[in-house]
Length: 353
Image: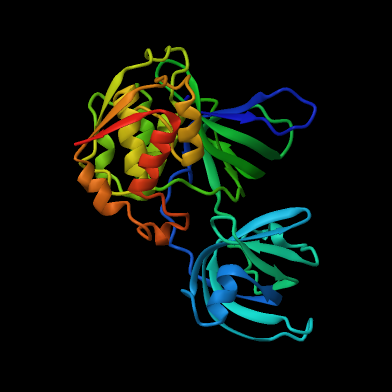
């Protein structure tokens, strides 16, 4: 069995395996990019970057807007301001038309007032409502192929684990929450079932399958297997590296020197892939966002400060990791200079080559 489904969600009950299967149809799929939806921020009192845009002094593209209001905190991504007008909800307030993506349905029901902030946490004012929340797409059926099922009812709530060739079970960062709609005998083995569910699971990209299948037998044999991938798949590579990380290996002693191959550091994901391999070898992990990198620099992830990082071909990152390069990635720009400053502040010496 290549996949395990682990129920970690039943309150008051210990985690338990509810299914094992040979394949999960629907776990890997390329979905069409969701179009930007149109929204109206109602009764806004803008400040900061949002006020600058309305006054004609800022870029209409705002990146992400975070909405905070009890009990929710959600993001509207890839926001562009289209226009505004006086609001009928409050004197001096405005209604602002925007386009955006990937708004969680958790915004409904909504509180009476939202605090708005940008990607860096800078205040952007308040609004009292939001119109235009899109209807979510229908759930894509998921089928467990060649399945051994140990489930008392018709509902399944479980995390998905990949089973490696040596029997370890590794989380993949996806879960299933849905009802069983059909079962039938499987052609993959006597006594096995094919089980279809109405899960609304978010699949991994189709090419992520080769990443996860390749990790079943262990880490890649050579450095740089990640360079063939784009940013999205480099992110999936890093997720697999994190979940396959072995914690039974002690850190290298302080004072070590690591060689970072910077030829393909054309985005922040490339940096994390490269530093992971510099410290922990092919397919190694040493962070996949700034918070995780900070955790790794504190020890127990392969290296211990102080250490020296020799960054070869650093000009590639200097040319690519510049302010605004990740505009469409919808996160704050983590530039080359920012990374150097962070490494320096934590006690790592960086030699640029």
